[in-house]
Image (cartoon, rainbow, N blue to C red; front, side, top):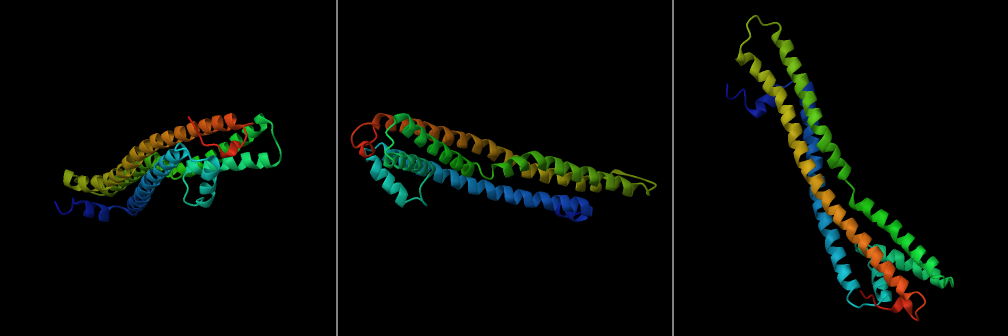
Length: 234
């Protein structure tokens, strides 16, 4: 009896539909865990790069020097540095066209930074949809496997004249394993999604705050001699 009720025996003894549901949920769980670990390392890298650039930005380095370093280090740059580079690039292009209107200069730089901000947030939010889908759908997929398994078990019992707990329990237990696997896939995905959503909100606020601060710096520098060369100041 103990051997028959082991998890391995329950999985092997399940119907082919339930086995298919279990295999699907196992694959989804593996993909979910892979996405979780990738997102953990990606968010840590984003946070580290943003903090490093923010320290450099407020250290007194001139805007031109920061822009040159950002252009040279474009591939390894963080989201904040790329947003800064896009704003400076547009600002300098408008300056080169002899556009001196402060509103046009600031509006162009701000639009460029906003477009870059949207691209960066799309990249940061990648794979969240997988976790959300896994967390919301997996329990229902597992429940489908359980319902199908119970139906299959009771159909098999219809031909028996005497039904006892020993004959009913294995079939029901086999079906319930599908629900257990569905919950095993869903719970980590939901927990990770909520944690990542909170961390991404913090990154978003940090980037939006930087855009406003940098816009204020550009606004103060418009019309001043050697404006692009001036160092940021709070």
